[in-house]
Amino acid sequence: MSVITIERKILEKNDEIAGKNRARFAEHGLFVINMISSPGSGKTSILERTLEHLRGNISVAVIEGDVQTDFDAQRVAHYHVPVVQIITRGGCHLDANLVQDAAANLNLAGIQLLIIENVGNLVCPANYDLGEKMKVVITSTTEGDDKPLKYPNIFRNASVLIINKIDLLPYVNCNIERIIGNALKINPDLRVFQTSCTTGAGIPDWCAWLAQQAISQP
Ligand code: MG
Ligand code: ZN
Image (cartoon, protein in one colour):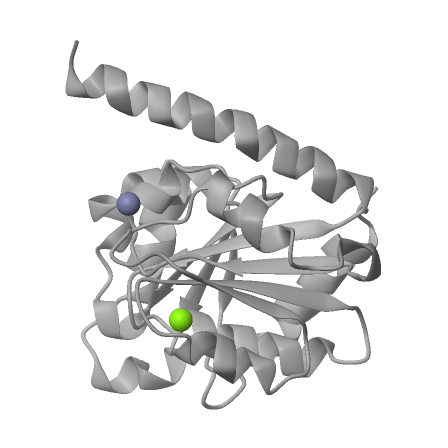
């Protein structure tokens, strides 16, 4: 009996439920992304920009994960998309079970794209499959350029890297080439976008790509 054994059991159970989520999402032809970053990277701002951009184009629903408050769900609700808030009450990640419950409150039949905003944390969300099609990791220029080296797991498990707050590059000590270089060393298949939610830079590219993925979902 050891801590490692218990954690493995939790993850096995999680993966089983994630498999069920994935099957349910596939039944509805739903494209699902899991957005992961540290707190303050701009997940919700990117989400808002994305909803604004995709409006009238494809139908989107959102699952918001937060430790406390439904502030982010309130922000998302302004865009008139279905949104379910999960409050983890101290829990530092979403798991497949929480997402299964949240998804039960959504009419999946009318949706093409489901965006899950995870709890702000770069560590354990990397290990929890929620049933998503892909993980999107976000890091911002204000966090410096060492995130890929410090948290390699999430960069390994993600399909997309968004580098946010590029408008602040002149004011912060951050080498974007270093972020991209180190991230691609860990995961050469990562697709990289550079965005600013303030200027809107990079948002059209990211949204065009995302919409294409959602529409071409088998
Ligand atoms: Mg947020
Ligand atoms: Zn956690």
